[in-house]
Image (cartoon, rainbow, N blue to C red):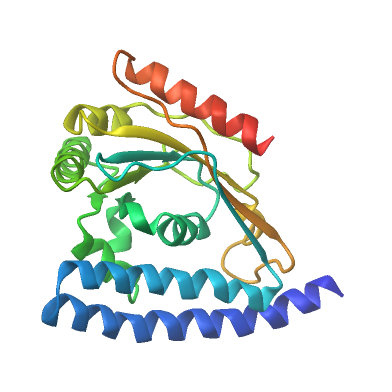
Length: 243
């Protein structure tokens, strides 16, 4: 019976999902070309708010908690575990006051309404995993951008999704570049739980009645610490929260 419900509700949500992407693609283009960058960013926040809260159609429960107050006078580097595409949707909405810009694979910058457009226009780091030099240059550019604007960067050190919820190895390279190029940034771990249960076998069917959680953990001051220490502290904090 649960599977039948999943198929029906998934169909309803995915129609909603697709229509939301198309409508907000037009809104983004208008905001970007006729208004300001800040207006465009707000349109992206609302896009993700609609995508996230649309999960109520699946009976999904959403939980957000901040165990620290995020600074407004310095950039932030968010380090999060990665389970699903819904990780990003939640982070953009819940952390919207910090304007998180993501380190993303370059393939996502084409072919997806709203999402690809935002990645190209927002300042996100679009990396080619087959070209290490290009990836370094892109992440360094993002680091410089958040240092200048006091926005934030978000990175998933696992690189690829862990659909089981078990943490993979956290790579240090991308975090190290961001910390170097944004020396005034505060590092903040974000623990994401159960998003992988939403789509364990792909986009369809989605699993209904799940409880998804985003928890902002106490910050890590990077000064005086090696990148290995920073990443290990973040991983340990995330592991403790999701266990």
